[in-house]
Length: 325
Image (cartoon, one colour):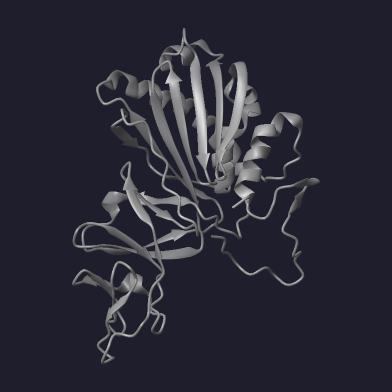
C-alpha cells in the first residue's frame, strides 16, 4: 500500500527521484509514501483489554482495540457515518462504538448497530491484519497479505529495548544492515571470506558474511575471540529485518522501523535469546550495542543523496527490492 501527501504543484510527476545523478525510486526513503509492510506499533501491554487507542505509521492514523477474547483489531479511524474519530470511542458488546452517534462496528469492520437507523446500514471500516509477537503489536498495511517472518524456535527469551526515534528514514535504518562497506570504517570490523546476498522472494533480501572486531576488548566482551562472528541479515519489505548470529553462539535480533510523524523513524529492537543460557544474553546485547552506538550519530545527521559505487552493490540491491512493491 502506498499512500502519502499530495505532491505540490510544479513538482515532477516522474516515478524516479534523482540524487547526485543516481536513481533511488519512488518508494525508497521517500517520506511521502508508506510501503505496504509489517510495522511494529508498540508493546502489547500498551493496549489493555477493552482499551481503544490511536496509533500512527507516519501520517497514517489507525484505531486499535481489543476484543473480549483479547484479539487486537486495527481499523480506519474515521466513522463512515460522519467521520467522527473512532479512537475516542469505546468497546461495547465486543464492538467499537463511535463517540458521536453510537454506531457500533465489529472486528471485521461491519456496522452491527446504529441507534439512529431502523436497520444497521451497510457501512464498513477498512481493517488491517494484526499480530502480537515478541511482546509487540504488529499491523500489516499491504494489499497482498504475507505472513510476518518467523524466528528460530529455540530462542524463547525475549528482551525488548526502549524504542528510539532517529532522524533518518526507516528504509535507511533497515538498509544500514546491508551496507557492508561501512563495517570497516565505522565499526572497525574485518570481513573474512565471501559476502553472499540473495533474494529469496520479491520482498526479501538475505545477506551473509563472517567478520571479527578489530579491537581486542570487543572480541573478549562478546565472546568472539576465537570464532569471530557469523552473521545473516534478512529483510522483509523496508521496515522489518531479522539479524541472525550463529557464531560464537546463536541469537537473533528483530529490527523494526516505522515512519514517524516528523519524517524520521521510530525504531524498536527485540533480542531473541536461548532461555537457558543467561550468560550469553549480555554478550549478545553488547555486540549490538557496539554497532548501534556508532551508527546512531551518523543516521541522525544523514542527508541521503546516494552516489552509488561498485562497493555499494548490496545496499543498491536493497533499494531496488524496496521500490518493487
